[in-house]
Length: 234
Image 1 (cartoon, one colour):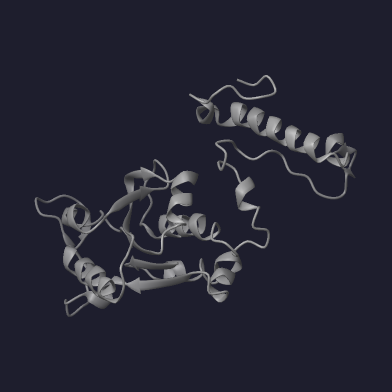
Image 2 (cartoon, rainbow, N blue to C red; image 1 turned 60 degrees about the vertical axis):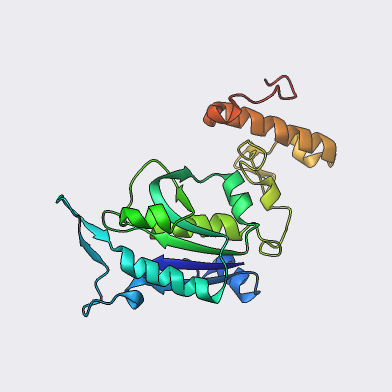
């Protein structure tokens, strides 16, 4: 997989991809992440890429020309499955979307900034708009990093235990069950006996029941419209 990120502030993303799982994924050759400064494609002598909005109003708008030039240049080198714009009013990122995008080959991610981008970018250049939540941030760099993290960790070989991603929250429409580690007792607090039983079927059943109950308590909207669940949980 290759991901090209177009941004007005490339340094905001450097550390995100320079450590931990995302760094190792690149070192293993499982993904290429290229961060591009949109100013590279500015024809302005001061390398400006924003201007005032027609019709007045506060805030600056990212211009269409450098964005169009950047996307066109990248597309001359390879084909892309999606050109994604990170936007507060885009489709809300969830696990099924991350799963879908992890199967793609090449992605362009455009980070908005200031008051967003010229609307013609959204009308003619972007294939998908994605939001990470119902709130507004200073720019699209953090949302782009979140999207990349959600996608890259799903690629085969990225996680040491390839089954780990399959048991993450939301993969089965539920949040993850409680997890415990050593010691089995600390400060008088004991872990559930079933986890020490060695009976994997019982452990799996307990984890599923806990996931259902935790989802009911913390994220009940995930259960709306779901078929009846086992263990008496509907």
